[in-house]
Length: 246
Image (cartoon, rainbow, N blue to C red; front, side, top):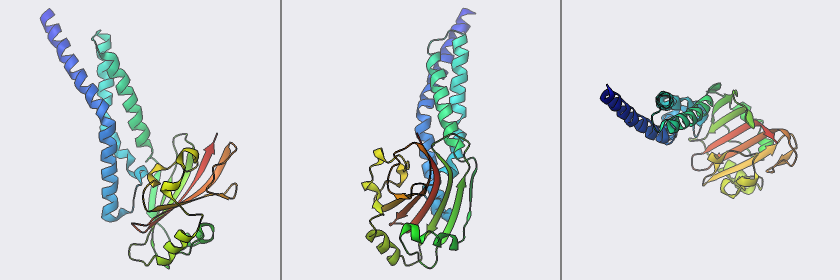
């Protein structure tokens, strides 16, 4: 009987170690899978460039691993099997991480927009839009308390449209700044590092203070318009949100 218990204990330890290792690498695997999946969806024409909100729930398929690690840790702790604590801690942390990422897509809606809705932004952005383009509208209803809420995004695509005038307006307007030139450490209002890449231009307008490209000095709630133009893909993004600064 004692030998059977030893075999069972040894078997449990091996499973625990395996679950612990898998749990540690699950965040990398899940986020990598999300990035590949989201970009593949964009490639086939759904217009979700860098929109990881919409597909973030895909990471929830990896939940069983941290859950099993957590449960195995509890079982082993009750049996006084060595190494149980690391399974409990790693399982709990990764479980919460996946749930937080997956929750981002809850409430995200997408539909084809009317190009006429875009034209009203010309004055604020200091540019003249081409005569037509393809618009995807997205809205994100928040279920988590964060500093960025009430997001509304319009993706405007100009793949088959002449954009020379649009690009000239952006390049000649000092309010449009290369994304790599932004001081992200002191521009918490931006809060979106996925715009940080070559050949991308940004404009931030604080509707509440009527200021461009500046970080609020006082705590409060601000209505923000963020515009991004990706020159390499002829893709304009109009991103509006509420920003809570403490």
